[in-house]
Image (cartoon, rainbow over all chains, first blue to last red; front, side):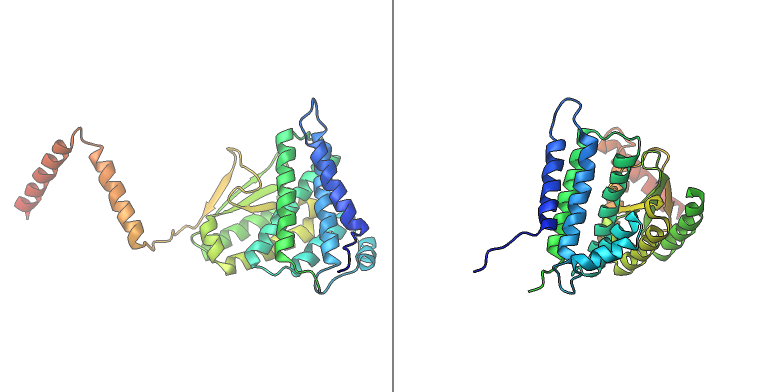
Length: 145
Length: 140
C-alpha cells in the first residue's frame, strides 16, 4: 500500500485552519479579527485541493492560469463555482454551500479591509462555518480514483 | 450601488412570493455588512421545492457575478445572520388557503382554547354556550 503524501496546498489549508484556531483562542484583546482571514483561506485552499483531485479535476496550474485573468474576487468565485458544479448532491445543498462560503468571504473582506473588529464569539462562529463548509465539500464531492 | 441592487432585488422578491405563495422573504440593508441581507422561509417548504432552489440559486449567482462583494448575502431562515428591527417582510398577497386536516384540528382547538379563556370557569362557558344554543333554536 502506498503512503499518502500531502501536497503543499493541502498542507497550507491545514496550517491556516490551525492558525485560525490559535488566533480564536481566549486571550486578553485576542487577535480574533485576524482569525477570520485564516478560516476563509483554509476553506479556499481546501476547495483548490479538492478541485484538483475530484472527477473532472482542474489542475493547480490551470487554476492559477485562470486566476491570473481574474480579479481577486473573480478568481475565488471561479474556484467556488467550479467546485459547486462538481458536487453530487441536491440543488438545495449546493445553494446553501454557496451562501455559506459567500457569507464567510464577506466577513473576510470586512476583517481584512474594513474597520470592523470581530469578537471571540464571532471568530468562533466563523470557525464553525469553516468546519461546516469543509465537511460539506468532503460529503458532496468524490475524489477521482 | 445598493439603490441599483434594490431595483433588481425587490421586483424579484415580489415575483417569487407570487410564484411560491408559501414563501416569506425578509430583507434589510445591513449597516454591519454594508450589503443587503435576504432570507427565505420556511425551510421545511424550501427543502421540498426544487423549483424554488433552482430559481433562487440562479438569481443569487447572477447578483454575485455582477456585484461581487457588494452583492446581497442570502440564506434560509436566519442561518448566517440576524435581522434588526428595520427588517422588511414580503409575503404573497393571496395567502395559501390550502388547509390540511391536522391544520384544521389545530385551528379548531386554538379557537376553543381562546374562547374558553373569555370565561372564568368551565361551567360559566358551558352555561353561556347552552343559552346561546337555545336562543339560536328559538330564532330558527
